[in-house]
Image (tube, rainbow over all chains, first blue to last red; front, side, top):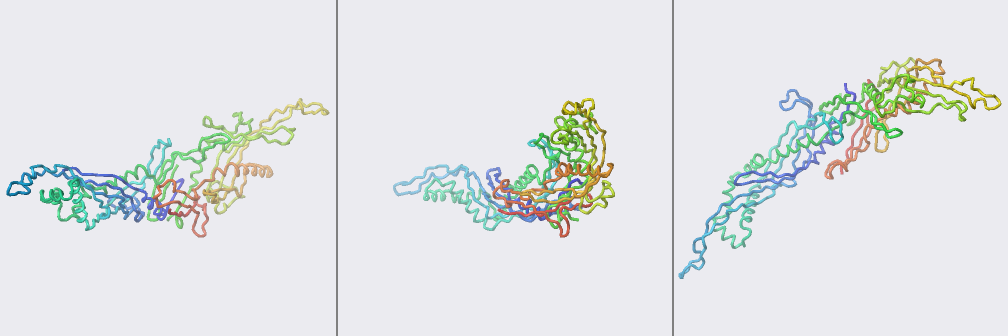
Length: 298
Length: 263
């Protein structure tokens, strides 16, 4: 039997907790290793989807207790930049006459080695990647020591009990973006030269863009390639879920109650007296389709 | 059955918490339950029941002696009142109300307050009376006579109300009926009833008033500017025809609706 019972309707939770998910924002970078290094620079926030209370289901294979179902949470990209660093090996050019004349070579191109450098380019891909997240969040009563307040507390900590990233939708304009990326790489490699010299060098190496394409091993299906790169190699989504889980479980509490709990506040006059407190032996939570019920027992 | 409809927020307090709160007050703030003049306060051997108070916590609230005349021509009377137990039933008579208060009306809390009291009344030492024509009591002595402790039970019924006070929402209680047992004759019983009711009304019941929630929760300073919520307003709201708060079946229940405002 609870001494104190607090219930909150599904509608109120959707208006508050469901909406407050929009305050979460993340900023991080990730990169791969290897001769061709891809990196991603992310700044994003959430836009709310729907929140539904799911009652306990003993037959569920994933989670049998009640939980909050946050579905269609949009990962809104404030910045999603894809970066590539590729090493262009040295290319031997020259050692021939560019302008032969009957009297000999007017312009001799001496033998030299071009490149053997790392080049880097970045393109924004926020407008071609659309992704959404479904989260199952179960509030779990936890008894912890709060060193700041110097008291034990009962907290209702939201635990992410399952998560699912909805299919990543990559727009078919990805080919244009990859072209832009390669153009940027070429510019990074040759940017210090005047345009006429770029043309000459490009001619000498047989097309630098093609060389870079070869180094990147770009397949025909660029959408699948980028999807695989984002979901497997760089995977910002898993990192976002980790950040959400860490934030929920370490920094967020849906409800907190000091243990012991003050039943009469401290008194300052006529005599200073400490608060009258009672121990809290248990805090329980029940989730059903219409409301969340918190039970407090002293 | 869902607890919140037609509102959003439900608060239910079971009367099972009462003995626990009382035990906490007895052990941590006994001065809320024990009232004594300085004579009794400084003589623990005169107390009707021993009081164990934590170090640094006064065992009693010191009150003024009963002054019968304004010119002090009659020495004042010392008193001790100790509340020894409180029992409560929300919407149910679990405390054994006397016949005069039965049945418990709907939407009431039944309370039983057990008390012990004692008086110390000055008694003139006749041998100290002076000459009648020269202020006979000027050198008179009035050694105190320590009367025996007596005990009684005060039964009360209280009604609850929800009050919105500026930005806070309170649940308050006030007495509507009271009676006592163990005290005779009727005039003395009535006097004791009203005297104790005065203490309960002014000292005890206000301690039971509690702040349910801020009526308006301003989140604009605690959340980032991008937050989709600015304020949450809590407004009492109950099903049509149902009281709010609702006091029945061992429970004190309050219901509210929440309104969220966006920036």
